[in-house]
Length: 339
Image (spheres, rainbow, N blue to C red):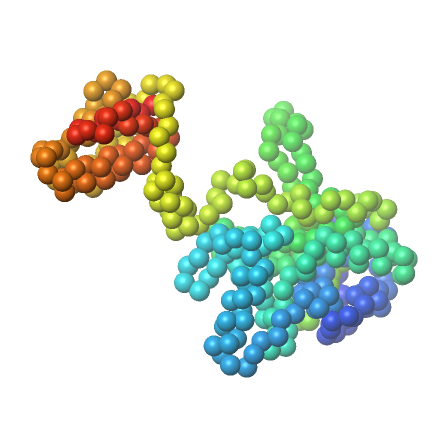
């Protein structure tokens, strides 16, 4: 199979209320059935009126940008200086919620489409019903990638083409059963289309031809199938945010009765982790499956406060090793059962 990637020029500036289907059909009268029309999300947002006016004062502008990012964000994933990586209400993890002020009037911000999959379905239906073009539609935008420099276009919405090609359960030419291979087809098409659209050429639409589609495929579930469930995400937070969450968890650490004997190696790792942080005179010893935290002057009130703090440090370190713990005796000494 070979594909062609064709730029669609001549669309011009898109304004709120513009008919995108008419603009695309007029600029690409050569569209064929089965083509994939890749549309930059920015012109979808402009046509849908997803714009925010910015005040002239620089301080007010900064506040308006901050308010827009906050309104479009479901949660902050990571923050470093002015850079914020957030999860949008769509589920996308992007810098500044995908809000942009490039290729738009300087006094405006462009938000992402409210529902990019719905936008793709509506544009596809209009091209078919009003202009006789039986195509698939992908709405694309630019994202960075974790652990890699540079950006690439990915799909935010799709209609008429499966977002994923699932190879799980298939056998490769070497006889290996594929267990995890799912190809994000629409992301690959979005990235390929960006090669002919560019950032400065005012070409917001490209057509990918040769994908083996007929144009009669169902709209499908769209890009929502690409959004990883939080329970399956191994990296749901940035390092600073994960550390803060861990500290909050440690502050509210509950008693948890161990169900099995503690792994000696993990217990030793927990003890080693707090060895340099406990107060002078605090000792930690292991007696069977019990950890004993003692002090040299058990009658001194200040020493007892430090004893409680050191015992909590040890329990937090045990939790970090995956070991539940409970206090058997508040002491002094404090006796902790881990497992």
